Amino acid sequence: MAEPKRSRLYFLGFAEPGVARYVLEKVKDASSAKEIEVSDWAMITKGEGRDAEITTNKKVDPGAARGAGVGGLAGVVLAGISGPIGAGAIVAGAAIGSITAALKDSGIKDADLESVSHLMAAGRGGLVIAVPLDQAERFETWMGRTQEFEASDRKQVVDIVPGRTLQDAIEDYIEAGN
Image (cartoon, rainbow, N blue to C red; front, side, top):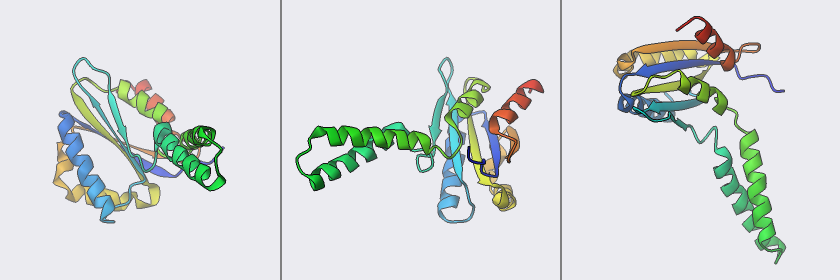
């Protein structure tokens, strides 16, 4: 089993889901501009009377559907190069892409996000932002200069290092009665 990436996770809660979306756009813009380094992110919104909706960074966690699309495209290319081997190559390529994407989930794990979503109250929005541990100070400096983060009414910071997983942190949070 691979050693987990040394990361600092920031859990930010917002009373309004729209604010979480806005703050996430600020994070993505700053990351694109190389002001900060973010290795993964997820947004969780929970409407009144609805299940939580989880949006993840597709660059890190492409998901099985996107993997199947890429694999299917690879199958089409293989079929074109190899001659008339039919739809079997396309289906096989889609299956390979789907499995590869599922194994490549190198960011925040879907099961962990599901656990976090159950801790959220209805009508709220939340962000989970993963930053390489060696870039955490730079991120925190940027976050301190970015006024939009003041809208966060809940904040939890967790370091993920060998021997300490996100699931461990969630269990500790629940046991503490938070």
